[in-house]
Picture 1 (cartoon, rainbow, N blue to C red):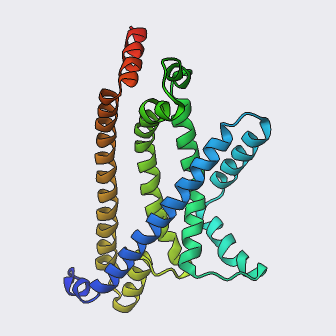
Picture 2: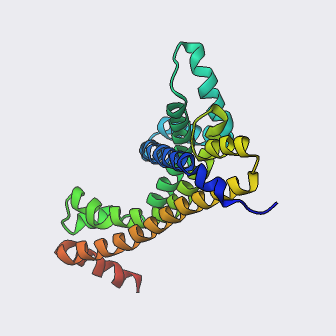
Length: 240
């Protein structure tokens, strides 16, 4: 059988609806996951054994469980406690929890990758804690975590296809609906593939631009702040 583009034209509104819902869920899950990830990362860096143990347990448990199992536990488990939530909301929460464990490790690794004593050195030359975080620590951590965060975000977008298993009408679900109506799986999933590719390409491009802007912003911040410029000069001299 020849490729039939008329199927794509006829059902294009369903593909667009699914793609839009995929984007919405991915954005919401990213915000939830990264917020939780930062909180868990900071918890793991706190002094004391109990906070570090709690953060490590959270990360290890969520990373050890397949995403589809996390999704099913929340989707089928909540009704037992008398709480029924819409499938898209359940999918967003499950996706955010799944990603938060990985984001937590990305943030924690980014902070630990900084040379020890940078914050204290910045304070020693007269910076306030806010200035040290804004001009020295923050920009370096932000630039360091953008590439791995991008990889995890792309993985999360692709994992959103699993939400079709709980009837969330995202892109893969709509593709299955169209395939069931047309019996043309090649045309349907070729279109679905291209749409996923377009979404992930846009996210990767935005992340690359963000990484470059963070580098420019750090350079401008340092040039405008005498203390930051002095700190950077001292760091370069010590590196020699």
